[in-house]
Length: 186
Image 1 (cartoon, rainbow, N blue to C red):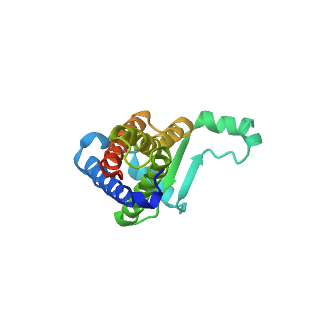
Image 2 (cartoon, rainbow, N blue to C red; image 1 turned 120 degrees about the vertical axis):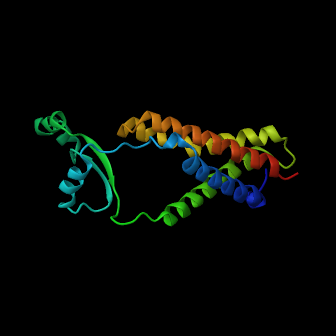
Image 3 (cartoon, one colour; image 1 turned 180 degrees about the horizontal axis):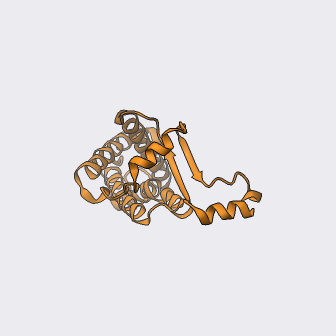
């Protein structure tokens, strides 16, 4: 076993590397540009919704409110008439990236801490590179990727976006694995 505090360097280094890599992926590479589509008649839809002053949050339309309501003819009719959607409403105003980037880096640190915990319990000092790579990489991949699949399953998010995010998570997992293997204590 390796105490988690002894792994502070691979934790911080892998989180920083993933943070930089994710910035490159989202700013320089074109494959995430198709993650979202423009709403048909966007201006009209925005104008129609604006009058409701919808507060930030996650919403579904139609909203049943209870298991019994889902079975009601009125709710079933709403589903047939549509539109059926889930949406996240954000705060109005300019987009400020600093809070999201800070939260993303904190998430990367948490993933690296989880990878350190699992790998540190499975392997001792001086363990060969590929063993460390396997444990750290698998843990990081699961944390970065697998949790997103349920949103696609239950909320019908685009599978193409989920596959792209999973590939990103695979890359982040491999980067985390490489850093842990490289900086693993002797």
